[in-house]
Image (tube, rainbow, N blue to C red; front, side, top):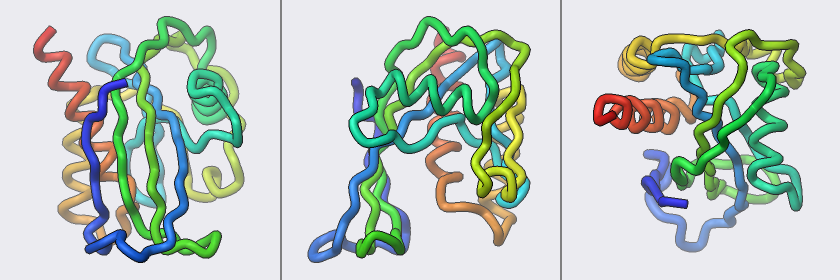
Length: 174
């Protein structure tokens, strides 16, 4: 799969000598015309791609499908294709580590427009996470405004906005 970018959170000036935890995640890119299936998170006031961390030994595609079903209630997932890898280093405060090195494996796929029931985790529910179909350009604009104006933005909004822009730029080329 193509490597898209390596990103460092602004608070990380060097990873040398840091205790690092490695994590693999998947992200789903589901388009229907110019609409994209995203998660709106009330706590951070942002849009993000469905996805999350892989379980130990879990296959990338299996993890992608599991996360997509849990977070959005997606049905009939098909046409799964690699999109690219977003690599990032960000602060981490657990597992005796200071830095998390995350590899997000992004895939495009198709699902039915009508979504089923979600199986959100407690923290996702308390953060106000909701699956929505939204125009990709409006989602990018919304996230850019959140980056510029919100003190409560999360650490993943830059990743999500970068990925949304990559998808939108490919849509324009097609």
